[in-house]
Length: 336
Image 1 (cartoon, rainbow, N blue to C red):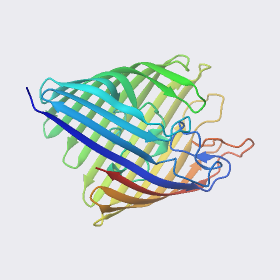
Image 2 (image 1 turned 90 degrees about the vertical axis):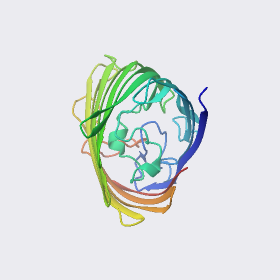
Image 3 (image 1 turned 60 degrees about the vertical axis):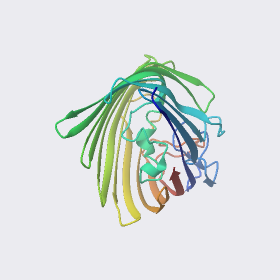
Image 4 (image 1 turned 180 degrees about the vertical axis):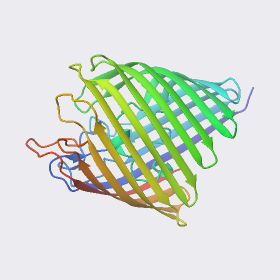
């Protein structure tokens, strides 16, 4: 019988955020009920989280559990299982998993909750809020292979998921199908994804998601960006098509990495309601003051597009659209 191995890891972010807007709340995504702005001058809810990951491996069989506590749609920090799966490896290149599995929809999906793995305080909300479905209950298969000098990683996932909203509704996604691929060579990483699902609050129910990401990491330069397109329908049957993109560039100087980030979200269809559309850019500094910890300072300029309140929540009635504002965040990330 193969010897078993057990590993325990912890990660987290403690962050304080202040947005200078009085007409709404700046939040990380639309699953956070409140944020900085109208509800709170300063808040630690937007980006703070704690997590632990336990893994077990015995020969061809393994298991993985990840428990996370962050700001939930019901306003609590109740821990939840973001991963809980069993793995069977056919060989060193081919594996199967069953259980709760992270969706590899974005370039940084696997480490989305681990702030130490990226340079900005938060991943661009204009892009990453477009798919609030981060994991699914089901199964996937993953194959590692090579094409010339490029290392390839291809996976297929099927499953389902229920997401709780800030209004207390339960949105059920069924027939989730994900096709994900990553290619790596030297400092370059290319990621592509397609996902479709049926959602019970849309008519027709079938929605589609496409993403393409590129990363370059060769010290002292670091750069990465993504393009995302989603197509779905509203409850009244109107087409809802959105596109978003971002780019981040940084330059390492010993333990310090100053960075710039620009992102944009636009709605390409008319649903009869105000669109969710905005642009933002940010400047920041990351200081790796310890091997497993960093300190980040980031300043954002956010401009909802004309005729839109952008991604902001809890907008006061009668507020004029297209009002720009600024956000400042101080964060500490760690991972062990």
